[in-house]
Image (tube, rainbow, N blue to C red; front, side, top):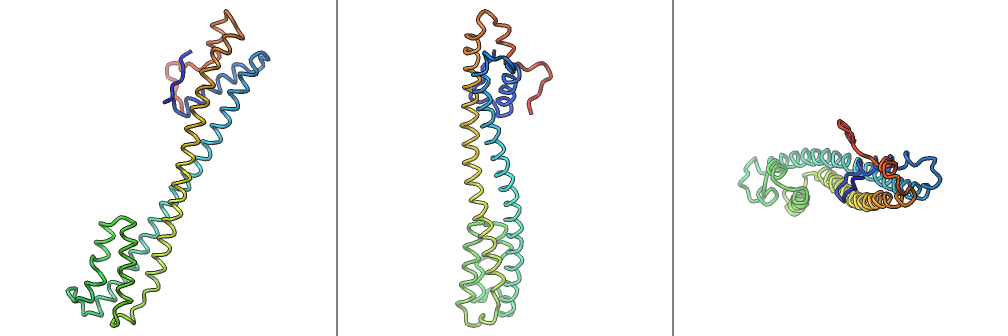
Length: 212
């Protein structure tokens, strides 16, 4: 038997477990070994399903963040146009410069999400602070910003859940690897002088085999 190592993939570890289970099926004397392998396989399979579910949610939430970012960009451009009209399109006007240190397009192109959020908060604060901009509506920008920040916060929660799920898979995988590797000496004791039989209980990739 070739032992699994700590770097063995989830797929290889699971197929190795299934081979031990299937080959010891119906052998009463091997049941304790089979039960341990099955318990480890069940745990790793369950943790892997959990990880896939959380990862899929996080990927979907990233799409939501990107969508909300595009909405925020549209609202910032509209606000930029309104401010620009108030200063007769003079972008050197101190009132304009105070609001838009960078144009929305430049901010969207160069800033991280955190920086863009702070930038937008600053834009809203500067518009509110300028009396000549009092008639400019900012509700839609504020709403788009809140939605964008909320989407990012949800994604951060999912990232944390994904990290925890990866840790659980890692732990379950290492545990099952140990169970499978220890199964060999345990089965050798159960079936002394039957090395070929014991070897047959374990997965040995044949030429052309692939592990999904």
